[in-house]
Length: 165
Image (cartoon, rainbow, N blue to C red):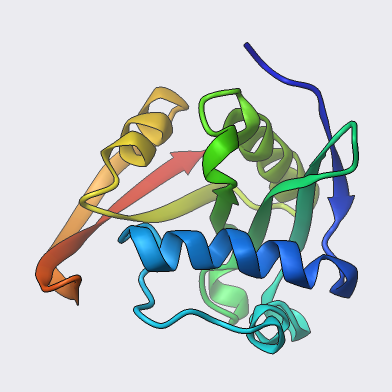
């Protein structure tokens, strides 16, 4: 079942909800690589400047923020202008409802508008749901870094996936 929701440009008014979603994944999973929770000031430090192409929150029709998605340059030099990275986090109570699929479609649409030809995603090796989601949506694995992270007293790796647009 795909639920109805709307995209809204990510802004400072969404700080609290974005931080709450991100902190859930920081505290409970390796999907967010950080070990320490972040505050509201952090959430917009990583969104400022030229290093973000596009960013949105996803909201229910009742105006509740249920996730966010970001399209950012792979590298900030012109040589790599046709490559962008995608990142999205969906509130844990709203996964499995098609929110991620619609967020990915939105990021693909935004990428095409600016001439991006390849999307990259880097995902924790423990996050098999996300790896499978990306593969189901046309990404292919192009590499792994094994045991490069250490969180919750255990090692994890990163899977790199790419999709040609």
